Length: 165
Ligand SMILES: CC(C)(COP(=O)(O)OP(=O)(O)OC[C@H]1O[C@@H](n2cnc3c(N)ncnc32)[C@H](O)[C@@H]1OP(=O)(O)O)[C@@H](O)C(=O)NCCC(=O)NCCS
Image (cartoon, rainbow, N blue to C red; front, side, top):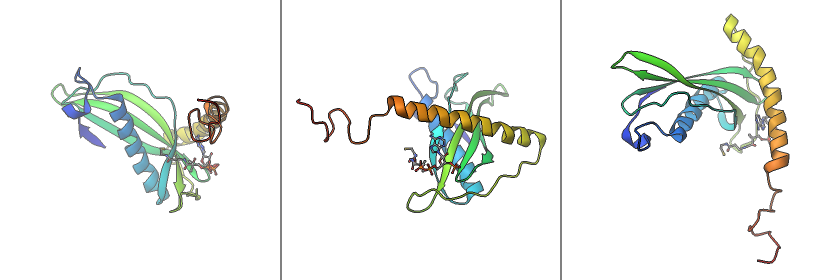
């Protein structure tokens, strides 16, 4: 996916907003997941994300997304982000992200996805490493959900908060 960075996408310094890059990453990743699963998909998680170089107004932002592994109903997608300066003829990588998409039916219920068959050495390495990333991601998510998520229907100030105001 390629887009020119327009002033509307940028902060006052003329650099693309992080949120805009995250949006593009999600779109590019979802397209890869859709094309593999041939089904609706939802984003289940995004692993950590760093922004190494600012992408400036007028530069091109390029995103390359591919499924690294399909599990049962979920797929891991790697998205690499590059900036391209067509005046200087330069391309540099600015971010790399791993996202998990889950294939769902019309009701939002997870449905199985076809397996991914890695062919090249690089694809096989990414496929192997995806298992370990998934193990760590799910363990981290379970811990974060226990620690930081409020219990269902017990949000402070919410309709079920029975404390005295
Ligand atoms: C993602 C979602 C469908 C998972 O539903 P669920 O009831 O937890 O379903 P399951 O427990 O059966 O898990 C389904 C798959 O999701 C994976 N999954 C669930 N939570 C995950 C997480 N935090 N990170 C990575 N994968 C996750 C499971 O490992 C499982 O994969 P597998 O079938 O390949 O083994 C559900 O949480 C959802 O709809 N979330 C909202 C998605 C959304 O709207 N995203 C847009 C931004 S809000």
